[in-house]
Length: 341
Image (cartoon, rainbow, N blue to C red):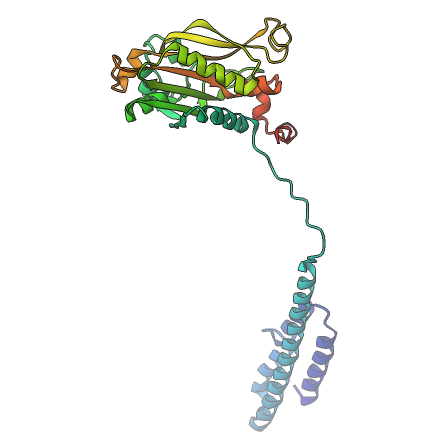
């Protein structure tokens, strides 16, 4: 290859590099000239056929050409890199004078709001919060609560069993058992939490729901204390004009047991759709703690007595806010949840 051809390669390289409009164009030029099969690389390989003096001179000129081409390409690549950086800076530039983007914030769930409201009322009466695991033992969930081995709530049709000895708690009453076994009287606690029962979801039932249960154990505690406590709770939650009544019932862990109704806060007892025309609304279950339950915690039943109660959080929220379908609490529809801000 003659020196003139080497000069042609260099001239062509200068023109093409100067005209390259992108990094990809410049890279193509580099490969075409300096790659393994590039024109200048081929020129350097052809020196083997030259005379020693000619080869020496040609090699010098070819290396000078190569160095110039590499320098031109490096400048071109640096230019493309700087241009890309400027474009990125412009694209990412933030105008601090522009108004901020509207960020939609969530809100507390109505079930959480109701739990907090119930807790606030009872904490105002001197109760504290006690919590326990959602996976419980059969002993804490049934045996310690005086539930007979034949009690229907133990059936697979009612309870989610994990093993023969563990289950998803069907109520928050096991927290009462744990409290009795870990604390000495006087005891005054409420235990909010999730519970699980085998059930088909509909407007008033769900396999997962929330409860708040309460336990008070002390000397001289009577049914009158229970009634007064729950009456004060109902008035604080639904209004001072609300009246309460207690009907005999049965729960294995209380004796005597009762269900508490309150006068309909919508119609004042005259009868309406909310109370189904009766003037009364069933609110919760309660009773005096059964001596067998107290004995599980080693409580002296000759000295101490106590009462317990339990209520469904979703039911309380449905009553207070006029919600007619429990499934709305679990569908995560923000149009529903945001109404409780």
